[in-house]
Image (cartoon, rainbow, N blue to C red):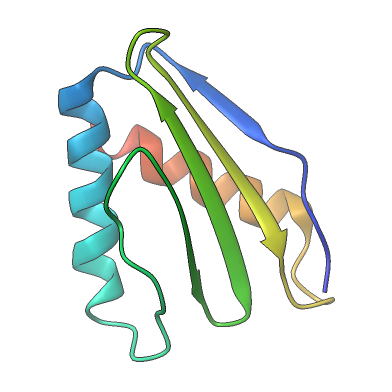
Length: 91
């Protein structure tokens, strides 16, 4: 299991954060191994051996995502690209 560096996204309004949460929830319903609730400004969720934490700050309009556990064969770059894609597709 590995830990990845946090990724901070800027210019994340409350509406955009809600869209990101909705996208994750929609995809999570497809994954039977998903654990966690995508609610609140901070939290933890996991699926397929990958555990993520998030922290959203409305005043700063930032969202920080960090992978705190992942399978050895899953690279940090792969996780980072998936997270960036998720945020970009939730505009």
